[in-house]
Length: 422
Ligand code: ASP
Image 1 (cartoon, rainbow, N blue to C red):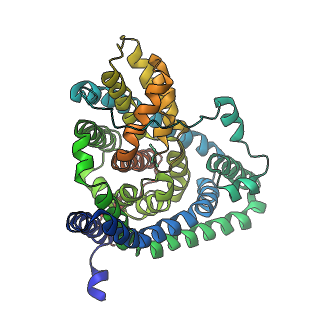
Image 2: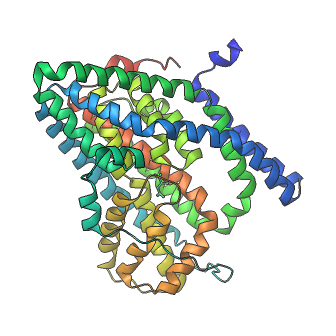
Image 3: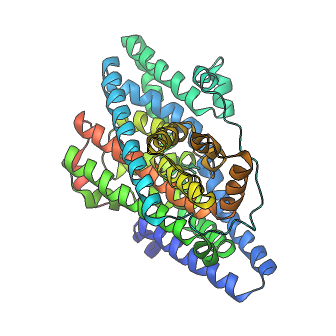
């Protein structure tokens, strides 16, 4: 067994990913579809167990880590500066994601000549009105918000509670220390759960590769290419640029050290489920201290979705090209702004944004029938696109947390520059 644990965790997870994809493809090629699906569904169970385990700790982790993170700042004013910096970076990176997304839509022209004949129309989701959503950020009952896993409400309450503890000075200390210790404990649970990651990732990827295999890629090859190339460009240029230019840190180490979070994002398609792993990776491998990791990352996992925004822009152009809608120059910035706003409101769960697509398509007045058809067309393939956009979403949170930590003097550069221990 020790040889297994001697391999670094990210390498084990990578192994799970590669072997899982190979296994899934092999099974789907060598058996009939029903038998393959049955076998892969069994293999997937270990993946589902893994997802449940990480989801299990998301709410307590956000609650304890956020309160502990604010408490660790030592001064409520620091929350303001960290918050403002993170927010500006979140907006700025989303802006670039939009540019790249629209650029990819123009270059790859993914919608030109696609055959929508076989698509079954699908109903779009109802977006909650913005006013209601904003009001919902303030929980009427924080315990209900915790129970229901209402992330923004939990974040809001935790932020204020952390500030309250700081303002209570000496009297706040015992509770502050309690939250610090509890958040350490929950974070350590992530370490235990991550030991299952190589197997979980194997099961999830095997299922996806085997049931939505190569044909998926080829059927919507251009769309897939546009999303994947756009995602890589965004990560390398924008996040690489942030790390190199704004934080003056080596880029290579950043990408190497967040690989396990990226792989979990890729296999689960959920930035919210990946959050515990993102927090663990960013604090343990990159040396971002709790005050920043605990505050910037939960917020990012909820509102910062560059991959989603990039994807929505591409799909909007895809739709226009597929149905021959003429886009005027003013439509492009409007698509970009709407995609950015929708991405903020997207929950960090699989395929969440696809069902909010109608809001973006409203910009150039796509008919409800066309919208339902596009959603129906993309839905069977969406998993592969979702996996990639979730990787971007998670990477963006990690990049912003690292830059803010560097600016705030909350980055342990020795840890950042050290070789990973796990
Ligand atoms: N699956 C994405 C995420 O969790 C959200 C989306 O559907 O775009 O980040």
